[in-house]
Image (tube, rainbow, N blue to C red; front, side, top):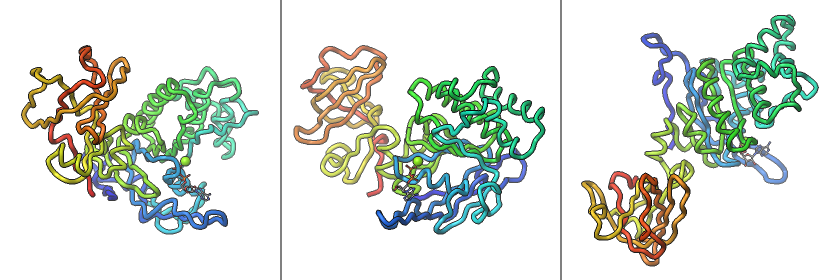
Length: 366
Ligand code: ADP
Ligand code: MG
């Protein structure tokens, strides 16, 4: 199910006229043909509108068509069919340099023989901007990413995170209308990735530039984006704010890709929900209680089934348990926040009650 937004869903000035979206994609399709694998449809009739100033994320597994969509928007690839408008202008036939777009890649693509400030000023050098102005603006861009004290170093003297900040400063120096970021943090370790995520968010807010970020990291997509779109095999399957997609996934793929979920189907669905169909029930919406305790009594709107604990993994702040409601049926994952210690009686083999609110078992299309 593709859900395109209209430009006037996002008026950018309070009380003022709605502007054309920063990006509008219409029925965009891309086929690659090679002798080895024949024709591959990398993007299939994609529809999308991104508002000016939005932090928008494309989320999908490897091979789902994310890079293809970015390259089409940047103009490095030509679509098989469809149309691309940037800020209300049809750019489908225009070369990359005629589009007001910059791209940040995963591998930084910095010039090793140039200093940090020369790298950042590169676009201005090409355009013939005078040296004094070039350097002043490079310093300003470096201050935006908090690297002004590293201006004279060369890329080899920087950490991976710092190099990516340089790449970001370079891409922002002439304030493009749109910045495309293709998995810019994928090569960084977890701690640095978190730090740079905060940095991306801050820089986007401070500059107001429209960001289109590509990632396969669901947590990154959920925490950074105003809205996101999920790509599955070249199809945009759902678009919306992170919370909407997480709470109301349109497909089993979206439910499972955005976090962890219990997918209920067949007899398990009937047993647990009372109805046939396919359901998504998030682990954090399930709770367990020992039989005979007050917590084992369902609260209003809750359903309950007995089950046996099959596994317990303590992870500090939370515990991840698996519980089997049927002797030979599906195993469910339960996420328990350890605001109080888990009783010692909760161990593999123990009988428990599983409880959840009926609204939390979300019906998915069949
Ligand atoms: P992602 O960035 O989500 O990993 P891509 O856009 O790189 O996905 O690739 C989408 C699909 O298109 C994949 O099946 C990939 O193998 C194929 N593809 C990408 N680029 C080319 C190309 N230049 N030639 C042939 N096939 C390609
Ligand atoms: Mg890619």
